[in-house]
Amino acid sequence: MKIKIVLCLISLLPWLNPGHAQDQLPKGSAPNIIVILADDLGYGDLGGFYGGQAQTPHLNRLAKEGMLFTDFHSNGAMCSPTRAALLTGRYQQRLGIEDPLPGDWQEKGIGAIKGIAREDLYATPTMADYLKKAGYATAFFGKWHLGNHPDANPRNFGFDTFRGLTSGDGDYFSKLDRFGYPDWWRNERLSFQEGYTTDVITDNGIQFIAENKGQPFFLYLAHLGVHFPWQSPADAQLETRKEGVDYTSSLPGPASKLGPHAPEEVPEVLVSMIEALDQNIGKLLAYLKSEGLDQNTLLFFTSDNGQYLDYQGETWPSVGSNGILRGEKSDLFEGGHRVPAIAWWPGKIPAGSQSHETLATFDLLPTFLEVTGQPQPDPEGPDRLDGKSLLPILISGGKMPERTLFWRTPEAIAVRRGPWKLLEDRSAGTVSLYNLEQDLAESRDLKADFPAILRELWQSRDRWEREMDEN
Image (tube, one colour):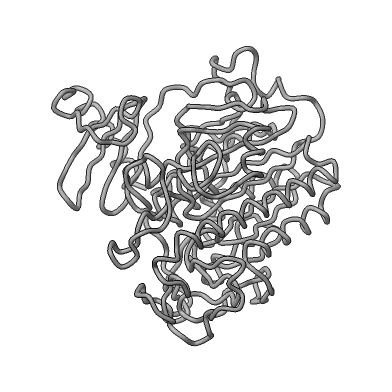
């Protein structure tokens, strides 16, 4: 049943000072908006500020021309949850997506794995829905991972155009999923594209811009890079997945879902994959500048979760880096969800700026609403957003009002307020309290020293869980 979208114009908060952030924007046409979401890119993977081994000159330049974030977080510690939060501006728990969605609907039957279902088109408007309403051409290229049955196709959620994969991972050359099925679509039909996936996604995006540069456009590039199978552009001649073969094994060998390389080769391959991603971002930026579109384009780059440090311990002992952060993908330590992030909007975002505010993926949608002059949904209504607009931070280096943020997986829950973080590992039966300003590596449990703070965060956790679980 359709739920009517109730929108109300809310006044901007007094911390937008001086003046409203929207009022500080130059008058004229609405900006083009590009979101680039990397996959499994860790806090210590990129070169430059983040200190990784990969050479990333284009992302480094993006940061020098825009704003780099030091305390930006994916809403989930794995793929699907973050993607749901990004598109809706809401906690993914409101959609019932707290873990990666499975991808074997072909075996279980079309309706067995619903993901983000068709009826959610009305219950939960997406980023693309809002921008399309504002007159934007909308396109999605890359990894969807919000359900790969036909009802969950991105075209049902506000995107005019879709090309890419719907599952959680696909071979970078053959475009087959881990179950051996073709998984590269053009709108509602399978349509194979030759080439390395990172290159193909970028080329599709540039073609879309070329076809729509006469009007505002919203482009969401959700790269598969650098998720496994770990394959670099140089691997075209190595064995790739073959149709009908099961690639769900995580053991080294020809049928591994992790790719054709031996474990000791993975770190070097991963660096090549990161550098390929960076080169493609450089290609996109060069096109925007050559067409004179850069001055009216807001671009946001981030990752869907942290990086694997290893995969199954001794089996794949070394993968990527989360810098000094503790933990890795799927964890609720900082390494699982504190991720690289850069915003770029020449002439609007001060060049070379940094923000140390605690921010999250679901803040992008309310930001884009404010940028395009659209009202925020009623905070008490059915479409209320959990994220907050970043525009004051982007334009004038403002501060985010104090708030409490939550991350939850089936195994753990984390609560963050200011520098304080409560982490409950439900699988191990442990509770910890950290001060991230003093201990970013989460090495000192302070719960015995600050029982009042622990109790306050615990109570916030209880209230939040009741609200999420009542949805």
